[in-house]
Image 1 (cartoon, rainbow, N blue to C red):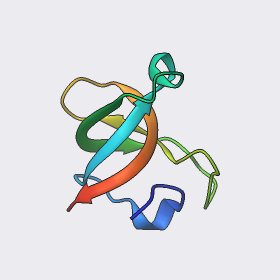
Image 2: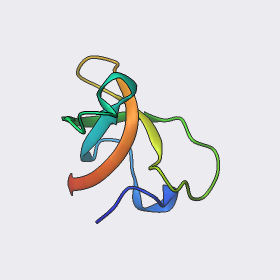
Image 3: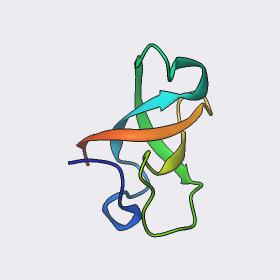
Image 4: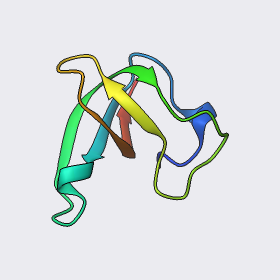
Length: 66
C-alpha cells in the first residue's frame, strides 16, 4: 500500500516515512503514526505524519501494517 491517500492511514499504523533531510538519499524511517498532519485527501509525495516513537515528521512512502 502506498501513503498517498489520507483515508488509508490510521493512527497507530506501522509505516515507512522519508524525512525531509533524507529525501535525496531516499532513506526510510519506520514507526507508528502518532498524528496525521496533511489535511488534504491525497498528496503526490505522501501524506505527512508524525511518528509516536520520536516525534519525527515525514511523508508516508509505504504502509507496513496496522
